[in-house]
Length: 402
Image (cartoon, rainbow, N blue to C red; front, side):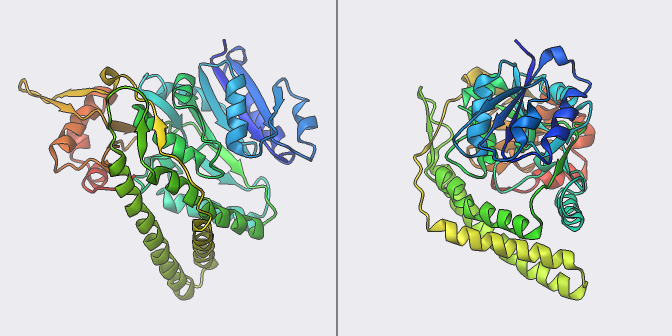
């Protein structure tokens, strides 16, 4: 049995697949503990011929879509951990080791690191735009998991690692989702009882290899178009598989996603207005491109809303209650038992979620105060400094939909 199985879905990836495979095989990770599986997903270019030059396993998946391809690779994999990489990425030498460090806790179901857009392929101006946009949205960290967002904390499937037992426990990627399947899987892991983690030094680079701006805006359109499938799926609520433990409540999630749908639309409209004004007053085309990208996404989401693709309630198994139970000793012989729906997002600026209510915990609440001690107990965070830090207060002093 290998320690890590790398799974790479590949569709017409001849421009980038060689650099991706070279970076894996030239990493610092022990090759005897590594297996690499490339899943050809109906490529019609030279992808397969290029892959066959490398000491890797090539399999074929006829069902179109990255979720189908990743699941096919996972079924073939023998590793304790599953590392997913897109064919247009390449990793730094210590990527595997850095991810495995944060995966040490058995409660961590998945982890990812920063992903940097680069200029290796495609339009220089387009890659400049992508780099600037992601840098701004992540505060310069390029770590999406660090953000408290309106959706589930996201393990980006372009470059990530899952504990295979956790991946299998929640039945892998939802193949009916054409987009947002990674957000969906991240959320199901959290519901089941796993924490998510960030490895800030596990650096990966992504090459946009499309046909320029028109192709990029088409991708933005499809992002909005298929967003409705993800929202519709979770609006049906959650069905807990087996047992009498009914948390989280399906009704709570319906409320959360109704709020989320409205919040996303209002957020996009405000952005369009803001970016339009900035493009005029700053004479910077970057803001115009951001505005145009949001317009395209909204058009896609409006059109996608009328597809009315129906989903049954999400079915999730829960880890045993003893694994989800968090009892925190806050001193003086006093303990606080947190809800079994509490999850820790383990990042340099960690935060705690109540996945039943769809909120980050607040410092003003009893559970929020206990969360500080929870971080100390489970993560070794110096809470004396953390509790006073402005960054941590900003994260936990406000409720966010997830």
